[in-house]
Length: 103
Image 1 (cartoon, one colour):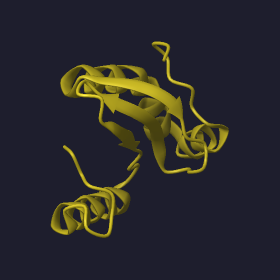
Image 2 (cartoon, one colour):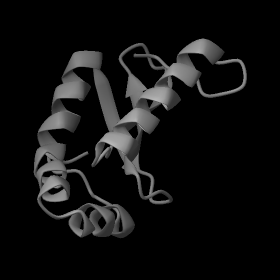
Image 3 (tube, one colour):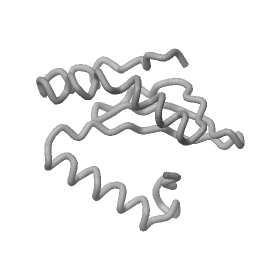
């Protein structure tokens, strides 16, 4: 993957519709993806284009395990609270009915 991730049109539109907060998210995305890739030793692959709430891409861990990198776009406190609830659901589920949360 190149240094600048491809951002699906609907994700970009949603971010831009939220003004300065969305523009900050877009501007920071390349460094966030790079930092997370380094932190978790990921090779980031193709970007998924089906959603609107964040950046989602196929990835592979250094041990060869396929995974998905998701960078959410919580643009206000309600969305942040919703994101935190989704993370909790994944933690509690531990990969039984939802995708396993690796980190």
